[in-house]
Amino acid sequence: MKVLIAYPIKINLNRLENISWRPDLLSNDDGLRDEISRFKPHIILVDNNLLSAETLHLWRNIMGSSAVLNVIRSGADLTRINTEKVAELGIHLSNILELIPEINSRKGCEEAMDQAALTVLAVIVLKETFCGSTNFEIPSTLTNESITVIGAGIAGLVAALFLSIGGYRVTVIDRHDQPVLGKDLEVYNGGTTMGGCDARHASVTEAVAAPTRVRSLRLTPMNKGWRMLDNMSSDEEVWAQKFEAMSHFPEMYSIFSDLVTSMNRAAIDLWEDLFKQIPELAENAMRSRRIVRLCTSESAVSNTVEFQNKVHRKTDKVIQLSKEQVVTRFPHLNHDHLAGGVEVEGFTMNVQQLGDNLVNYLAKKRQVTFRWACEVASLEDTVVVLKTGEKIISDRILLATGVSGDAPLKVSPIIKQVQAVIGYWLKLPNINRITEGFKIHEADPVAVMNVTMSVDDATLIISGGFGFVGKHPIVKTSHYTEMAVLVARTVRKYFPTEFEKATESNKKIPMTYCLRPMSADGMPVIDWITTANSDKVMYVGATSGGGFVQASMLSLFALDMFSGRNDYAHITRAMVSSRDSLSDCLYYHDITDDDVEETPEDSMKPLDASIQQFVDDFLLL
Ligand SMILES: Cc1cc2nc3c(=O)[nH]c(=O)nc-3n(C[C@H](O)[C@H](O)[C@H](O)COP(=O)(O)OP(=O)(O)OC[C@H]3O[C@@H](n4cnc5c(N)ncnc54)[C@H](O)[C@@H]3O)c2cc1C
Image 1 (tube, rainbow, N blue to C red):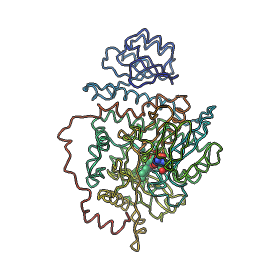
Image 2: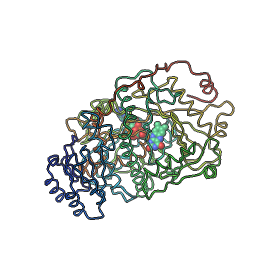
Image 3: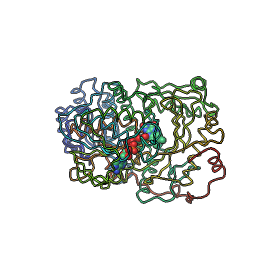
Image 4: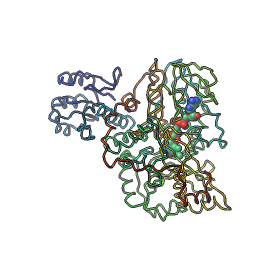
């Protein structure tokens, strides 16, 4: 898909085959027409350029009547574009100023405008390029290059797979031992993927946070907030302000969410295609082939149907389920609090089994080597320095360290951008032999709970709960306990018999957590890390609650960037780490009375008696 950029966007997209970078055409209408004739773009990004009827006709004639054409426009002057002709010729117009009107009133927000335009561009290209389940081709390159992948979580393992298919020699390093299924995995320092619970969902709306989470990070769990910490460091404070500022810019936020949902949609297809091509990867791991979202009120059902229809493709099936249908489908749940549901595209996954399958598959490949129990202390250009002092030399490095890679990321602003949001889970005996995974939409801070079965179906794994912990890997404040109890109480509400069974004879349910790597605007990060060799070291991650589903797509992009093909540059440029500083002026907003922080509650305060009682009775924290 070809893109003509005819305004001086500040992010450099120069020297890419599928992008014509012509900021000089800003006020040169004849030149713009010449370039349209020569380059034949599908998308044109313009500022205040003249898009007359003549120019639009020329473009449509050159491209033919069936081509999908898009104009992304950030200029304010609507007299310079023939909007009637745009409509008549079936050209789609995304007017950034209409999408994010709040920008107009701000001075110096060109960078935010650029970011918005790039994100809209990425969404269009994603939707047009990956518009149906196709046989994805993972391109291979004639290369003898070596790449060290740091991090054997889902991002690193899938990237290692794609890079090895792409022709690279790959060494995967992780500081934890080789994971052994069923043994010692569920400890957080094993990383989010292998050190978390063995259950993930792939659906189109994973990792889409509601822009209504105004001041979430200031409010404690008991007040429906995400607050876990008493005091934030200055880096955590900046992250928190950016996260909260999104609620002041809902249109901008919805552009970012569009990118995440479009990525997720394509990523689901890519996973399914990968499993068709290499079935052993999915063995014992891929479960329910559709995902049901259960809702607690009629209005939640209709809002969910509307939203899911918006983010799915026209050809996707989004099916509304009545309460009766939900009761028939999940007869063993307590339905008192449920009003109905929505069935959508997706699947559930036992992610540790998938990780194990990936490691076994990769270990058989000649060009892949694993180095377990090796902690990286630092990077010296493209030399990886281990804690032991050993140096590993390769041509390139991919950092897939999730939220725990501070040591090798020392030089990069990414270290501040990627922070942690906690998630909890517990396990119940699957005494009613539930065999289909599903989600329950609850209110914050429990939010959407995922229910998945263990590989042998003997156990239900239920995850939920959000809390901002920034750069703190271990949190044991009273807010931590409150959140755990809120999640566990909600679980008991829907699974009373299973909960009772798990706690009979004074048994306690172990409840634990791990940390989701997340950026403040919710979009993933895929970017070169600025070093002397700026196209040698890359970071991929920050995917929030969508790290599993997005791993397939991000790995395709990582291979694209390493190989220098840059076929997807118009998508990946929207996810670069510099977007954080580019959008600084947008994130900033004037403090109003509403923003005044309430008196912080001491997170070490004694717990409320009922919370303490619940912990004493039922939980091992
Ligand atoms: C409760 C919960 C539920 C979730 N549910 C879903 C879901 O349903 N769907 C979904 O898509 N996502 C979900 N997620 C999010 C998803 O699990 C994460 O985004 C994803 O696992 C992150 O993977 P990663 O590879 O980026 O990071 P990680 O899995 O953390 O991998 C990073 C690896 O790097 C290693 N490492 C770090 N530093 C070093 C170093 N210095 N030297 C050597 N090795 C190092 C670590 O040991 C680790 O193995 C959920 C998360 C949680 C917590």
